[in-house]
Image (cartoon, rainbow, N blue to C red; front, side, top):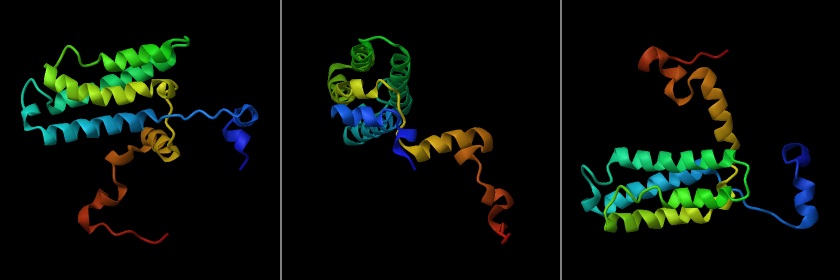
Length: 157
């Protein structure tokens, strides 16, 4: 395996001594959603209609992921600043002040990493392969072993 084949800027990175960490956008959104779930578990006041319901949590996570995707397609110098602004302002029109403070703390963590998220990278190779494969065979939604129910037997080929 040749490293320059998979990482074309490999020599340039080490020639100048600058290594920039890249954040996985999918992992960042997954952690955000998990933190929102923990927030609801810890604060029963956030449960219920017009609060931090499951639908709102999904919408917030989708909004952050959509902002990352949208700003990464722009080729401007200030796109990371715009991404940071988009992430921080995604909740201001939905929640009251107490809930807003708690969610804003979670969003600030993501917004601080906006320069590393602007590439919209997915760093997990297995995740990338599963996404490609899922387009052809249904991915996790179709389990070939359970086709015949619990009586199915795997045969040696």
